Image (cartoon, rainbow over all chains, first blue to last red):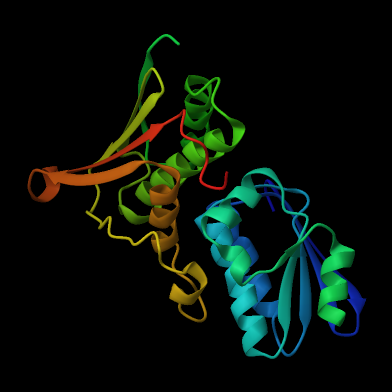
Amino acid sequence: MANIEFDVTDRSDDLKVITIGGRLDATTAAEVRPKMIELAQGPTKFVLDLSKLEWIDSSGVGALVTLYKRARTGGGDVKVAGLQRQPKEIFRLLRLEAALETFDTVDDAAAKLAG
Amino acid sequence: MTDRSFKATVPCDITFRDGIGTMLHAICHGANEKVMFEVVSAYNEAFNNVVHHSKLPDDAPVVVEVSRRGDELTIRIEDQGIGYEVDHNPDDDVIASLPDGDIPDSGMGLFIMSRCMDDVSYKRDGQARTARNELTMVRDLSRPAGSD
């Protein structure tokens, strides 16, 4: 994918870490959203590692919210780790943190999901 | 700060968005980084809106005019695509307002614009195929970012 890094690793049987780096915007979100839908099957828990994410727009937020809503519907959950700079500002402006709880590190987010 | 402005006419193609974004960044020189994020985010949403929702062909012209008078920044974007509504409530809860499944982008884009800028206005002039959409966004660059 152009201008974006997307990687998924299994941290345990029911916990995946999705790493997204670069730009998650109108030019890349259309590629990410189907992957989110495919991943969010069943009661899987996810940590979104956004520490390498440089820029996000409404299309990118839509892709993240797609994962969140589908995971929750399937009995899973999503936490966010590593937000900084512009993506952090957008999360705050949209009050996304009220639902997509954020943590400084992947370990912190994973611990919350495990608890 | 010397008053500055530029006007660019580019094709209705997303690949032209970031070049203008770079010039916008330059015109906002001296603004707080978070304010810069807000201004460029609002501009990106507006340009995306034109490209994805105006139903214009890729070679149709989009006019972007940016001016800075002291700390007041004005961004005006003009196109001849279909009209759209600038109707939003900044107090809406974004997550709760989104439907299940595939989530439309346009609502959140307008939401971001309204949160990032001091004023967002839209007008449509003319009739039928000659009608023009004009979106104007104003921001006081000395006002702290919304998250501050």
